Image 1 (cartoon, rainbow, N blue to C red):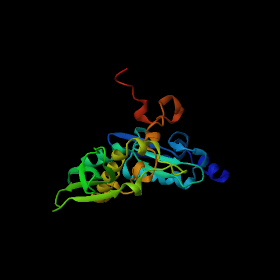
Image 2 (image 1 turned 60 degrees about the vertical axis):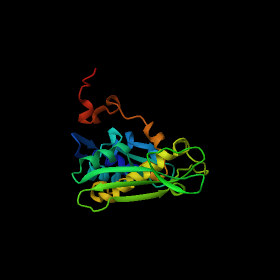
Image 3 (image 1 turned 180 degrees about the vertical axis):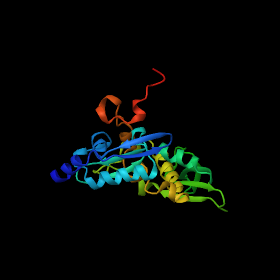
Image 4 (image 1 turned 135 degrees about the vertical axis):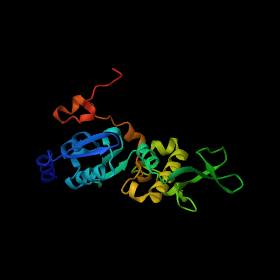
Length: 232
């Protein structure tokens, strides 16, 4: 681990620059390790940092706007996840994208299953999964995905359901179906992009991670964060 960390330190000034939307993003391995890791940054390897940098550059993701996260806990392999807003924005920029529907699959008191738009469940119903349809120009039928709640529900190491899935299971499973349908409909646009909830992580905990402010960067402040706030 000491060798890996020294390699990151020696390579911390190797900068990559790319555009993400209207912004120019500048990243170095040192910036990623210091500011953009959720969890235990000291255990992140060179390879994991390089993979994160390459995904951000290839998919034009801005991690300072919560479009990508590098998550590391203990000695487990790091996980790279994409922020939920990045999926919707990218789909809307594709000219072939003609809309999406998504919802939940419930089993009612009579034992019948129903695909329902949105995330509403009623008393006496059992939530069993989620579904989504993406409409693509030139396709005769939409790309449709269904997913099982039991397969994707997020759990802690002790097996207990994590707080996000416990409080909003219908919202979570609907989102899993939604992002999977987008990835299947537009593989080039969403290659390597996975939502925290389909990886079993607590997206609420990730969204609570503070985004670096300019004072924290010293001389490594990204250009778009140096611009004055027009509302101040």
